Image (tube, rainbow, N blue to C red; front, side, top):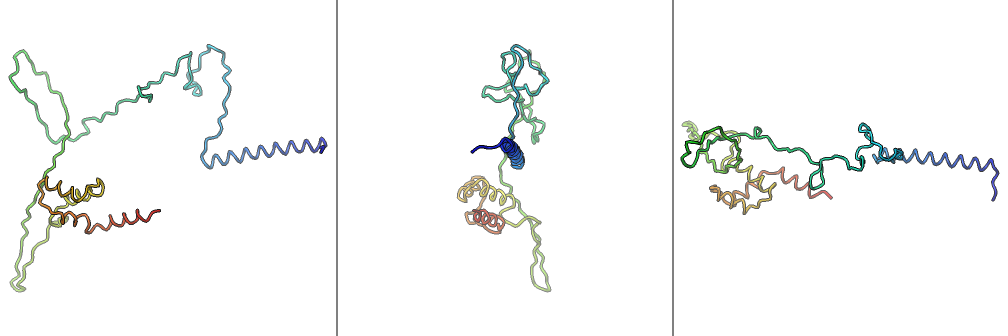
Length: 217
């Protein structure tokens, strides 16, 4: 099949127009999907031995005069960063102890100062409280009326012990048996039934969250 020159020219123009339209559509799709577009890289036409411009950001990371870029790297290959050591001033100090020498100090030794060293520790102990609740007797009604405990106190066990038990069981996955061992070693007189009651009763929010997680596909 032969084509006339006019038809051949129209066909070429139409082909170029279609290619241009496809390129525009492709760029729009990449922008909508946040894809990286094709980079327009230019050839390096600089003569051999010429120095690169340090202010040119396009030349960063290239080899300069046969030497690699001067980046501080550690032994594992990553860029060496400054030390992010937490300042000791940000740690709350609960107790200060001045250390004394274990034995007599020779006369030629002179005290020039003290070196500060912070040691972080944890104190775990029981805190048992005895409440004296007044009781009143009504002679007319012949009934006794006790006063309620302070707000936030629900009786044995206390709120802190309840919170610790719930956190250990749900967050740290500590079983009821291990909680019983832990509380017994700490000096708490608490039974397995009381621990089970803490973990199950009046904890509807925990059960609702668990049911929502199980319903998810």
